[in-house]
Length: 152
Image (tube, rainbow, N blue to C red; front, side, top):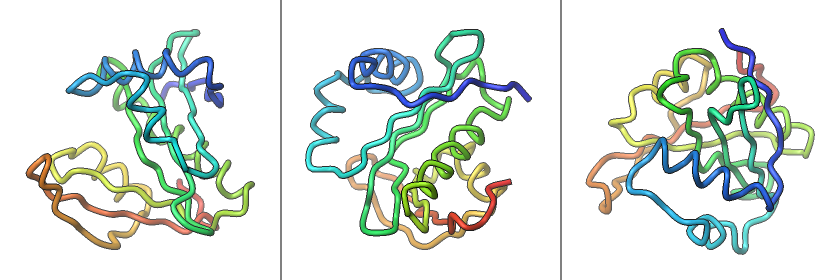
């Protein structure tokens, strides 16, 4: 397992996150896309994972409702998957959430994103719901885990 350096990203570093996002996901997005998503959100948290000062992954979350922190987006560059970086990002986000009074970490992932489904189940997240995403024509699986639990 690679030991990544996980840090909280400042607003000035958002272009780096957008660049990494565009290496991981399609279609590509702009900085404005992220800024719009953050509008009206409370406790927006953006974290970056780096190996040898190279950005390799990120996670973005915000308060969904009181006591529930929502992991909106997590991505790890394909060259660095299966090295424990996704878990390190979730662990860091969960620790931040616990330290800021949140009781649950929640996220959803498309049914076709098998690596994220496996990560959620491997680390003890519970399936708490599903919903149809008509834009992507796929089922979203909703996961939640009490932050009092260790993600290991």
